[in-house]
Image (cartoon, rainbow, N blue to C red; front, side, top):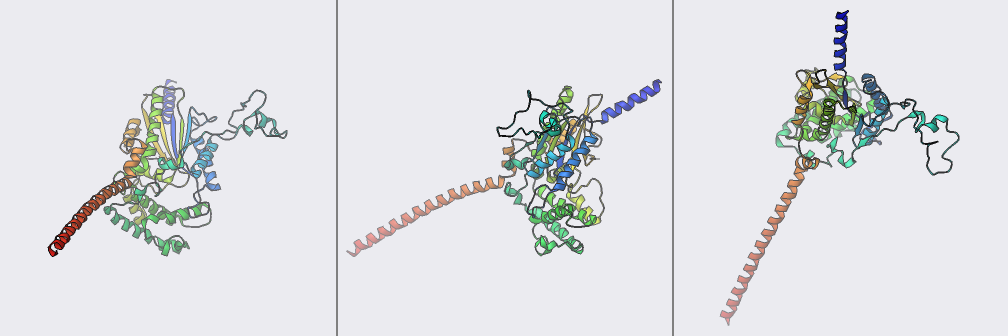
Length: 442
């Protein structure tokens, strides 16, 4: 009897320690239209469905954390300032906190809900349930935090117009760029053999400048998810590998650039991890159990590089050999999710497991303590205010140009002044000689 009691106790203890106390979910938006299509960049209907299904899967996987209605004390959702990410976040939340989750507790305001001051707003066709609850079926409106579009650098400091320095490559980067372009173009005959008209999107059917490396992957991915293009999984995987290699070239084009791409978002995830850790240590009854960050593939890919889960070299070997060796990920597909599971054992120690699409990432030799993970993050975050980081790592080239222009103006004015003085002196000397000659002639 005692033996079985001990076994059950140990099993129960193990199960409780394996159940996370809180999760931070970083997800990529659902399928979107290509940037070369009329509705460029916007979420497709399939993309909306993908995010809703992701929400259902998260609810199924973490029932203890994601049951009941949305609670602003325990749940938080943030999206980048793009329509596709905002709509993706709302669709995902709908999958977790779905219709009818008000638990049969209608929210009543005195006798009835007040309506807008329009004639006929209180239609007699409304059912009793519609009159008794804020929305039909007890549906919820979710609070979703976002950032101004021009502050989207928190999730995506990538656009050329936002960060001019993205166009700058140091001289030592060009050897790798040339090799990358050759490897990229070696894939073109295989794509054309599948009937893909590469020349429709790349002039001459070849990549000439690295700035255009994403175009082919973008359009093929979008058309593939829309059912308008067929491509073998083998060649699509090779194209995804090449896209990821090109992105990493931009990440690593100069020291500190990778940390610039990821640091703004990592800083916010770091703050969330610290807050949850402090709440667990204090046994806070209002523990934040679910945080959602809805962003872009470039964010997850940069995290994978920082956490040592992929690299340019491993991807190049994969492309050339067709075999994946060690931790090596290419660009995460639409609706991918990186989940930070925050655990606390019976000994009160806190650790974090990180999973990408439910596959655990081996970031630490053993399980990552919260302290160890925070150290990894600290090594990859540029400290200072967002504005200071932007000035140092994004607009530095522009600032230097302004400084050079100022010095150039000073030099030009100084040189002009010296030349003016010399010309004035030369003219006075000439006048003196002419006067002396005229006096001698008289």
